Image 1: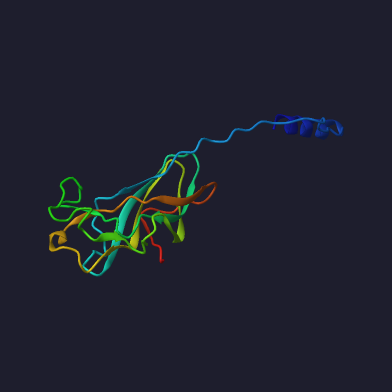
Image 2: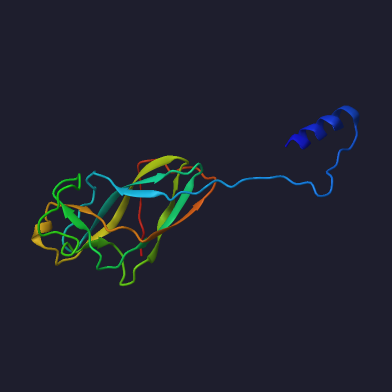
Amino acid sequence: MGMALVGGAAYGVTNWVVGLSAGSSGEGEAASVSNIGIAAVASPAANQLFPGGVGDVVAIITNPNSFPVSLTGVNLPTNVTYAGGFTTSSLATAQTGCSTSTSDVLWNFATGTSGSAHTLTSALIIGANATITVTLTDDASMTPSTPAACENTYFSMPSLTGIAATGGAATPTSSPTSDSWTS
């Protein structure tokens, strides 16, 4: 940068051509990369679950990096990895009879293979050092055999097994927003 400014000034004043010596180089440093965080939100979803149906999941996505991150997909646990039920939206007190082994509440489109990849309908761009709230529309599923103990219950969805994301310049998604995956 300094060479370009000096060269430009020299050319403008004296009409001399300033070149670059062979072997000249510069140095740059890449930023460190941190994992983004995805956490449950204590907010009732617009589309609530019922036996045999699907519902929304509300989450907060946090990007601790100094650059925007584009989230384009998620990897889901197996279709027998269930959400735990809780008595309140604080997710502090477990709901009796509605545990991770009995709830039959899972991520929609989960398969028998852990890590199945699902592309979001549109990329979520989380700004540098920013947080967004997203409603994952119809991305939770409740099987018809869900026990009655899970009625009027808040769920902590199973952890995702991975994400598809890239870093780089992009316009952040406004928060709150909604998104989903379809298969």
